[in-house]
Image (cartoon, rainbow, N blue to C red; front, side):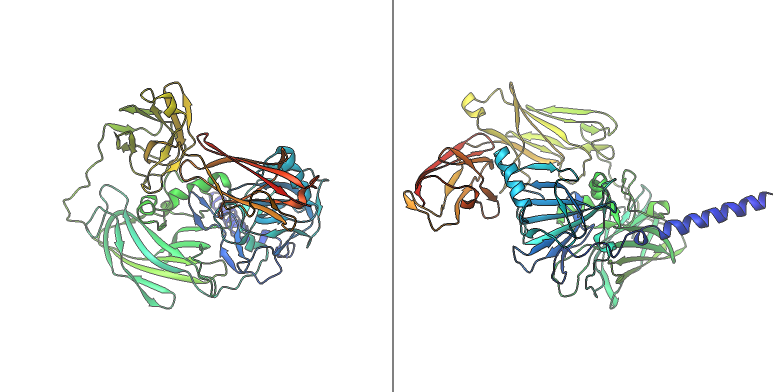
Length: 570
């Protein structure tokens, strides 16, 4: 009876494994969606690529450095959302499809016929270039497969021309790798493994007799195989690699699809980027060696999972990917990186279990500012207060905190945070005339401090952030600049299609702008890369020949500059 029960459990477990292994790529329709562009697809960015504080949520398709290529609806459906923003996705369209998926098309230069007019009406109603999210009902704007819904561009900040394309589960909003839906790309090059780091993961752990992380030299053993010299270790250890993928002749260092680690031929660690949710994307800072990245701007992917890491990309981990090295035993560690096509590279690491004779011990951190992650933590010094909600940190830490000449040094930006914390400066010592123009700046880059969303109360100035480092108070009493218009005062502009002018602010930055012709608000599109505003004369018919143009530009502390000019147009 007991034997039969055990056999039944084994059968159920095997069925479970089969279901798990078959789930994923086989569940996605591969002939439902067409390509969003009518050119051979070359990628500038892959799905799940490691970015600052997030995974890349789609594929970036090259447009041969051109703006204005037709972008097509990849299947029948209806436009469920439209958004226009200066940053982020720029001009973007979301199409919901009957099969339960939503496709996203971002960084567009302009929208297709009918859609463009609809969006402009919203912009004129709001009197704003940025629209926020425009949610549409199912019967408002329907589209058919192959219909032109927009034209490729580079809106959304300092981006090169390309199309960002996503596929999401409409119900769950989880993002799915678009290549799983049948999109074909050319890729015959295996990932490149560039760096290996070994991590002692316990107080008694050692690697090559040291308690410190070890950067290990690697060399090519054959075309796609790498090897490192044998290392000695004891206790619990882990590994991390810097790895990227090349696609054909493209020079972009793209992300890989999967990373695996085996011990003596048995899988210990595996993750892939089939799908993830936006809410878990922040845990990328625990997948990578965050401290290493903050120092060297190079990402090391760990082949072990940190305790607080809630990413759902892992599959079948043993001991969360860590390795326990026993004295006198030999281990053959193999790390395997694959791209989506299946091109594979392997790094072999021979390890011998050797009792460490080192008597050196890592000194424990100790400062007056200890963070207990499960509690609210608040510290004050020399007129600056920092307050951390509970579970802002992923673990208890000792924090370095100092204030010198009104610059607050809050540790170093080498520890990832899960939540924002508050920095508050006392401002009682400042004059009213100064307070109007004062703001908090992130000063981690001394040459280029940047504005933080600054709020003010009586005798207090504060902001919130998820980045440790240096913060200070700066004063901006300079108005934004308005310059380089494509017309002069009293010019005739009958032959011009667009009215253009540049704006900039070198301190707190541009916050808003308002443009008018004959006291009526006009839509000026903002190209932040070129610092240029442009107005399309086709937007509305002007009455008469003499017209007054007015532009008011404000920065983030309230300085304004006004430009007035007269022009003539038939």
